[in-house]
Image (cartoon, rainbow, N blue to C red; front, side, top):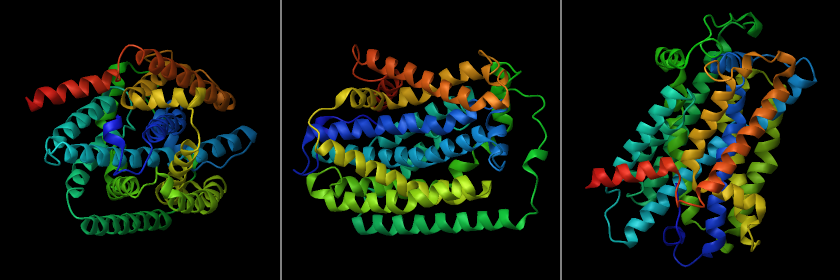
Length: 393
């Protein structure tokens, strides 16, 4: 997930400084954006179980409406952006390998295996909504696909998108066929390991409910493969280059002009089941528009600016910051830490969640800034790199 000047230039098209800035800033936006979705899980007194149960609850007051809007603004968009950025990272690594005369995918599956281990530890010890395990599996598949012809990659892209749409349709029909249930009639989680359990209790809870917590990466595997391939194709098509203005304009129109308004209306005014359409169909289009907007912005901006520098620092330590933000929020919210999530009344949950988000963002941006003053990569990235080097030896 780290780019260098040698890795990031395509065949003579993009100015290296602006391109590197856009890539790092996009990674930083994706990391902080995924926290915008996950923070509502972390601040729920019943964790992910409570969050899923609350999706279908209709807003009744101003705070609940604000919560609905804030959740929808982040729902799926930055996860999709992070997925696309992984695909771009794969294309960069393949380009670097080809220039150096190394075979592809070569030892990359070992990198993915180490990423899977990182994700497994993150899932067990910190966050049941981990995405790294799914990315590791997807990366191995796409790494081999990138070694095939563009035509073969196109067939895989279309095939996985069709498979994804079919799965979402079947899933939606199964939800529509079931009898309506009162979301408020769900039983409280008892015992509640998030509020009352120890660190180890929560680890055991994740193991016992691994089927529920790991079902999303399995169901969206076709979509993940497609977005990886889309990221690689956009990179090679020059989406970061001046000549890619027409491509960026199309992405902006499709994402912000069409998908974003529909996504917001369905997510805020529709029921909880609409999340299947918004998160898994419309949100990826918005993700591509965000990518196009940032790419366009930094093509015409010679300096990064304060916010851009902080985002690029988070982007350069993306893997470390992803794990750290979940850990910091868990310490603040869960019973084995400060246990703040269970101490706030439902009426105060929205301002508490916003405050928690801002605190976590402040912590990880400060961490990334000062860490990079002494080291050239994040701690988790360093361990990942060292592990890969030793395996290859």
